[in-house]
Image 1 (cartoon, helix red, strand yellow):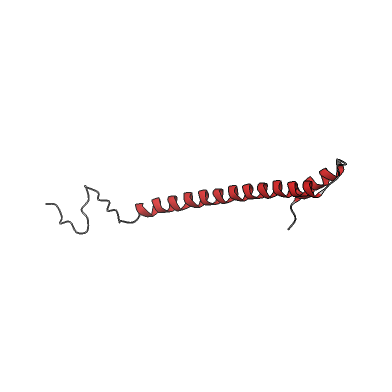
Image 2 (spheres, rainbow, N blue to C red):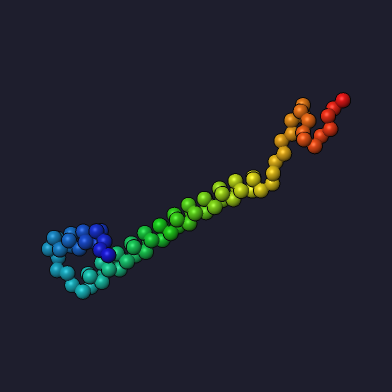
Length: 85
């Protein structure tokens, strides 16, 4: 898989008229490798942050619905309440 950033950097280095030797190629590879690692790490952190937010929101909503809530209207008798006399 080719990276457009890598291709563009190599093209710019060739256009500058510099003589590409093995040392410069190794240096470019190290710089690009570090950039890819940092970009990948940022993507992973973003993914886990979003995943954590989704899980926490789902958990918070699930806890609210874990127990049934009985809403009793004090003016009307419930099905189990005896009629008031």
